[in-house]
Image 1: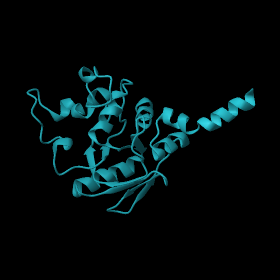
Image 2: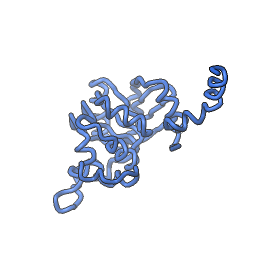
Image 3: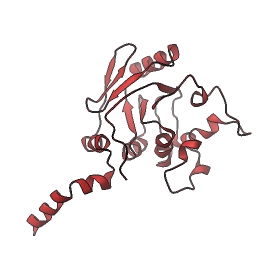
Image 4: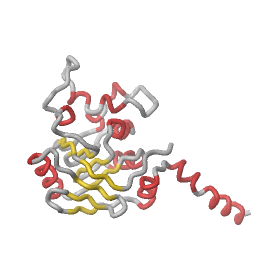
Length: 197
C-alpha cells in the first residue's frame, strides 16, 4: 500500500519521558481486534491518556495542547514487550511520522520501518538535550532529514546522525511498502527471469 513519501520534516515534538515503554502501553491488547490499520490512533497510550471513567487526563503530553507535531520523543527502550505490529500502526495513525529514543526494541523498530514510521536512535546525551529543549520551549522545532540521516535541534543547532537500513530508507523516501518496491522493479525481475531461462 503506497504511503506518503518521507523526505524532510520540521516539526514540534511531543515528549513522553518514560523508559521501557512497551507495546501494551502503546496500544492495549483489548484494542487489537480490528484487522485494518485505521482507527488505532484513537487508542494510542489509551490507559495513560484516559482515566477509568473515559475522561482525558489533561497532564498527559498527548492531551496537553502546548505540545504537538509529528515527532514523538520517548525514553530508553521504546517499544519493548510483545511483537504486535499494531503499536506502529497506532503511532502512525495518530499522526506521528518519527519516534526518537536512545534505544528501540528490535521488533518494534522493524515494524515501524515497515509501516512508514521512522525510528531515530540517538545517544542518551542527545535525547536528554531534546527533552530539555522541549521542556524549556514546547514550541521548539526539530528537523529530520532522511536523505542526510540527520536530526537537528533547531533551537541549539546541534545535529545527531542516525543509521538506517538502505532498503528501508529507499522505501520511506519513495513511499513504498515491500509490495510497492517489488512492483517498481518488475522489469528488472522479468529481465532476470529471462536470463535465467
